[in-house]
Image (cartoon, rainbow, N blue to C red):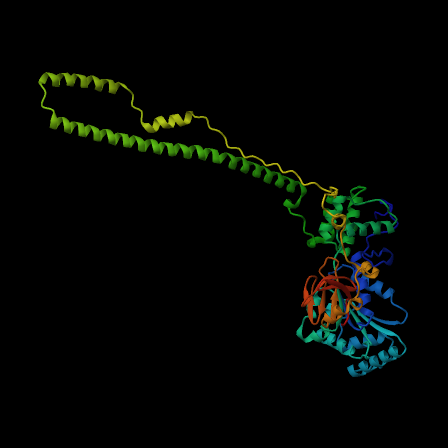
Amino acid sequence: MYTNFFSLNELPFSIAPNPKYLFMSDRHREALTHLTSGLGGSASGGFVLLTGEVGTGKTTVSRCLMGDLPDDTQLAFILNPTLSSQELLATICDQLKIRYRKTGATLKTLTDKISEKLLKNYTNNINTLLIIDEAQHLEPEVLEQLRLLTNLETNTKKLLQVILIGQPELQQLLKRRDLRQLAQRITARYHLLPLNKQELAAYIKHRLSVADCHRALFNEGALTAIEHISQGIPRLINLVCHSALMEAYNSNNARVDKKIVYKAASQALGDDFQPPLWWQHKNAKVAMAASVLCLVLASGFWLGQKPTKNVAQLSAKKELAKHEVSEKNVDTAENNTHQQADVSVLQVTPLKSAVQKKQKKGVAEEVVKVTKSKPKIKPQQAFVQQVTELPVTSVTTKQVERTPLPQNENYQVAAVDGVSEDLLARFKAAIDETKDLSNTSISLDEKEIAQGAIKPLTKMPAWVQKGIPSLTFEQHIYASDGEGWVNVNGRDRYEGDRVAEGLTIDRILPQQVILTYRGESFSLPALTNW
């Protein structure tokens, strides 16, 4: 194998659940904290739900939870839930070490045995916990049988706590109308998300360091390709990384790049691998960006030149139309004048002699010859020639330069006649406060609550406590990307929602919920009754 080639003690990316390769990311730590808080406190009992896609590490979280259980807890763990109701009860009896007759055992017999065991553990201050993995395979009637087991309770707590771990199909199963009673008993939910890019790089580095390799075997391009292929799912990360190291070993490459990752993924995942399309490659993206830039520049140049040509043509057409109208008017006026003159001559002037007619005829012939010798130019042609000889000026757009606003300037308050020192001091304090608020990011977390920055509702003024309506936090799912929600008084609420008049939800944290009532912020436990 490639262990000697890369100086590894063992295979670092095996899909076997080796405890020493456990990588507890922030998301897995949040899930573990949420499950632990759902099991403890006044809201303990009933059901706790953990869901996530295949290979996201749900089993890892359950193993960590089982490893951290206190000594006063008896655990029953079911790995294969494809059982009938009677088989499930028999398996619970086996896990809790309950003796019963295996021949002729009925549902009533097994239920009575389990109830006796739960009462005995409660008397001895022992908590009883049932964890069912792959719970999406449970039949509805089996889930209903589990709900009936949790009916055994005291005035303060239920005697059996159940954790259901499964894929997202489990959430759809619990939305069935015939399972609404069980869904209402889920006191805590968490949906485990895949790793992001930073967590993926830390995950690979952690597994390599455990195998005694402290140098980077995957470059930046390879990490990006692994994230694209695996979508942050740890199991797929292991498969792709193992195949990539094998491919690098066969091709005698000391470091894995993107090309090796894609080739290895096609061999390891088979038909499930979707190679990137041609337009998703880096070179194709650069070429497309350059083409778009050239197209934008060409369009801008064309749009900038087009108005000049249109203006010149439009002005020429207008002048030509004016010239035609003026020429037409002149011709009409001349014709009218000539007609009036001829009429007056005929009416007033007597007939001339033949000699005078002959002289006039000779003069007229000479005038006609001179007129015929002069070339005829139409008014339209003359004006078009004149327009083409004029210089055409291009229209340019002015770019307005904007001066950037000053950044991080220190504003000073100077004394002015007629202004008191108290007013100047308040001005200075306001400026300093604004500067501090602009340079710091305000966030709410559990540490600030612990330090007293956000007070609990029990320490708020009396008018706040009396004005808050009754609140029942039955279910609570927390996610670091802000998509968490709480079930308040039978309805799902998210960050920013208004619960009642003047009461809104500001933040949803793993164990606390920050609310605001008429400008006053306070905290409440995620699962509580007020």
